Amino acid sequence: MTQFKKGLFTRNLMATAILAPMMIVAGCSDNDGSPLPPGETPSGVSDGVVYDGYLVGATVCVDENLNKTCDVGEPSTTTGAGGQFSLVGLTDAQLLTPLVLESNESTIDEDTGAQADPNLKFLAPAGSTAISGFSTIIQMKVESALAAGSTATLAQLKADAASELATELGVSVDLTTYDPIAAFTSASGSDKRTAAELHLINQVLSAQIVDLIADVDVVLESNPDLSETAAFGALVESLIPANVAAVVQEFSDGGATANDLDGYNAETIMSSGSGTYEAPAAPDAQAIDEQATQDAAAQAELEDAITTEEPPTGATGGTGS
Image 1 (cartoon, helix red, strand yellow):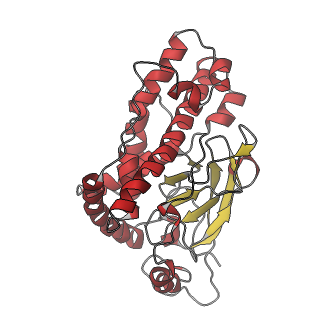
Image 2: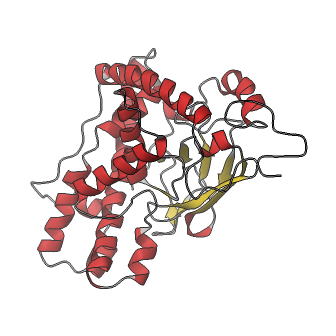
């Protein structure tokens, strides 16, 4: 994947000023902000894998201030072999908060054994056990629904968004939990082909995210009043996963085997010359400004849900003794 110079997305967005009061509350409290009973400490766990190929040495965090960036003071961990991550000691509120993945100069992509692009960033709904380009799109679908006035729970919104993306891609798996790399190793027949196709589609989406971050940095340089958070959301909204899936399907229909597909990479698809492939256009200043309005509405609803709902099914309780 092409390497890009670190840009505006690497700034911490006034992290200390924003996070200090939040951490006092979230670090030692339950959903409603009340202190935990004496003798009890947060014990929630959120774990899973991160993949373009499996990403080793990347940061996964709980995005407490909802700015789509891992800031100082937020619960975080570094991914290990196989892209594994585990966030421990989380409160119920933190178990309901979206996750962010940030690559860096030390991150290795196990597909190639080489450095991953340091600008790569993923999002994921709370409770996701697979963080990827897919989970990033799903989180933005959740936020779009919240901004539009949905009253569904975060768990239902996550399920609906995951189902919607799966339908767009023509598959029937939950892309907030599905690991195509592991599935390829253990599956056979059509399931093995599906795993290879989804791995390849995600690689293309990852490359598109990196390309768009570089393009959006240029827009932000010219419009310093625009929100970096909204810029990332707008670029994710510009992705067209069904288009990528259609191009990968062309390769399948053209005789590529599951093993062939597993051996391809993002560049194979993006430079194939296929008339079907459509590179997403970077959002302009107006699109970013409109995204900021949506973000404000979504953030208000997210904050309310985080303080009132139960942690996602399967998460380890956040307030154990």
